[in-house]
Every structure is written in structure tokens, then in C-alpha cells.
Image (cartoon, rainbow, N blue to C red; front, top):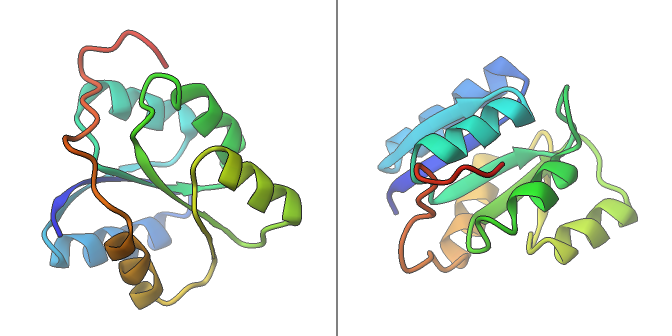
Amino acid sequence: MGGTVLIVEDQLTLAKNIARFFSARGFISESAATASEAARRLREIPIDLVLLDVNLPDCNGFEFLRAVRPFYPRLRTVAMSGHATKEDERLARELGVKKILIKPFPLYELEELIRRQRPPAEPCSCADSTHV
């Protein structure tokens, strides 16, 4: 696999466990506990994949994705939530998210989901963007 993954999760223990999982598979892991921190990370470094919690302290994950999607249309995103409603599933599809992982989830499920997603031709280089 490989690349850079941005883990947007406010539960520190979960974020660390996911980061270890990605590191063991050759990814560079970056973390953000809030949507505003995630937006800053997107501007600073090229990101290949975002693992996005739907319920963040400062913003709904789908609102965050709706705000950044126009600037990073090929940004691969996997959503995760403690529970997902039909409306969450609809919003996810509308924003290009193929699946919402329900926490707690087995890490092999995350791995299979990532393998099925085709990587973009190049990472979403966000360092030169003034948006988000």
C-alpha cells in the first residue's frame, strides 16, 4: 500500500491504534482531532487518504468533507462513526464516500476497504492551496 493518511478522530486512543495499523502497512500517518486541524493539515502536506470521523467536536465530518471536496475532488475518504443513519449513508454517497465504518470495527475491514479503493494518479497536494 503506502502513502500518507490523515486520521481525523477526536478519540486519542483510537487515533493512535489506527496510526499504528497504517504505519505497519507502510503508510505515513498524520492525525487531527478536529475539522479545523484537519483543514490545516490538508493545506500543509500531500494526503493520499483521509479516515474521517463523522462526529467531530467542532464540525460534522460530512460538513467538513463538503467544504474541502471542491478543492480536493480526488481525495479518497473513508468515514467512520459510532452509529450511522440512513441520512449519513446518503450524505456519504453524495460526497463520494463508499462506506461508513461503524466503530468499533475490526482493522482488517479497514484494510480491505482501502485495498478496494483505487489510488489517485497523484496525491492531493494541498500545500499550495489557500482554501479550506
